[in-house]
Length: 383
Image 1 (cartoon, rainbow, N blue to C red):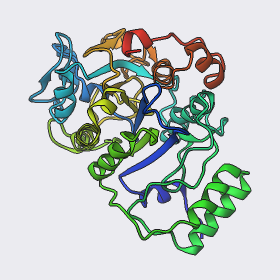
Image 2: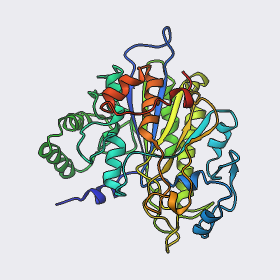
Image 3: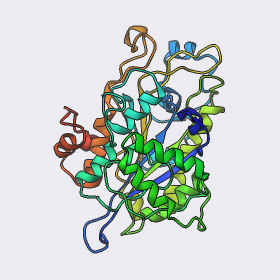
Image 4: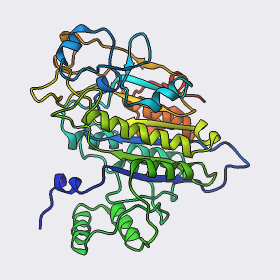
């Protein structure tokens, strides 16, 4: 039986959670423990839906069927989608911010290639076998203390040895035939790290399970992240942002996905201790944005530039940080997409430097192969 990647992905949950970077010792009597949470928004999050620009008549005309009829106010230039209520509440406390007109350096508009690159941090699809977060953890010395919660272990956190710690999820093991297919695929493609991880999962007791609802996973994650000897890294996956049809506006498919993200942030905030949340960064990651113009199905196509949503006590201040490229046709990427003027890898490198207390130049050298990325730490995050 042959299972395509697309069919396999259809069987996975809408929201998944992974932990990594368990502390080898308690931070209670030493330096303050900091946490990094990455929320992967799969499908291509529409940055202009989450954070629409104000007063652009041409933009409003191009999206006449999916314009927001109400918004939450952010700045003189940008508004916020009303589904992001928790984000707005944190904004009012200087605990959330955004970077707009940003993306990984990928313009091919393929979900599979784009998601591979957003996790690997590379420029050539499928060339790298490890993820930028995994390499960052290894650079910071967070080795031998990670875990993965479900199959497959995301590329994002590959690159550090895994052990048998895990957080229970509301799922039983796949059928033996499916496991055998996975085993053979890992063997065929020489995926030793994944093979080792699979062997660990096969030995686990699945009696103690937790539901995989986004807010329940986030609440449990908040509790674990608050522990002095708990994980320093958590990774969520939220699917559904590929809204080619019936994208909706204030309500609808994209709004529902934004609500899923907002619920994760809300549950993290409510379940974490004040000290833990004050020493946490929560960042989004997506493969690309969406077209400026709506299509004939009242949706949007794969685009380029998007936005990164940021939350937590390590956010420097409430701001929309951007080098705004404009939305006139000549300013768009290939005449159709919001351009990207900030390499999003600079944001993630700055975040890892801040949370892991590692020199930014060392991060860029060992995680991003010496790429000439600007250090945005002082502009975006608290030391």
